[in-house]
Image 1: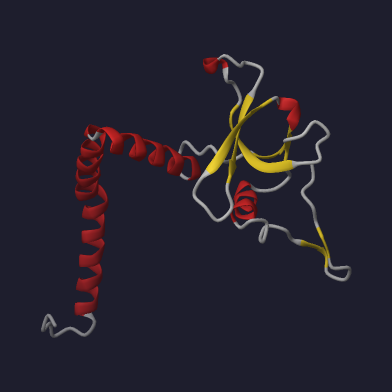
Image 2: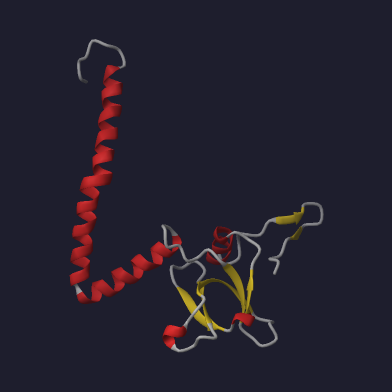
Amino acid sequence: WLGLPVPGAGFLVTLALITAVGFLGSTFLTRTLVSAVEGLMGRLPFVRLLYGSTKDLLSAFVGERRRFDRPVRLSLTADGSVQVVGFITQTSLEGIGVADRIAVYCPHSYNFSGQLYVAAPSQVQPLDMASADAMAFVVSGGVTGLVPAAESTGEFATVRS
């Protein structure tokens, strides 16, 4: 396409061009565009609420401020017969007047929503599994996330406390 007499020169020029466009796009253009969109979203009253909440939720999954990194089991009944899998998001709730409680977020299966529980720390037990595995287990409705404990017996490993 470029008509260069050196074999492979067009490929190298194309590669260099793609790299340059990617670099420019990820630095100058993207930052400017993202800043403009965030500024617009910050000025629209209802959109600001939805955009801010969605941005905070997504940053809880990835980025520097990840919050879903401590999977737990939360007992919903006094005898512990009903439990849900969730993630500790706050260990101190003094700001809302309940210093003796923690915040546990329990995502819904097959949905991008969840339920926030304020619970006593005694109702919460850490799970011995990676947070990504716990999230996959919950979001899939319990279909994924368990690994066979013994191939011969067909039993499955349960979450250990």
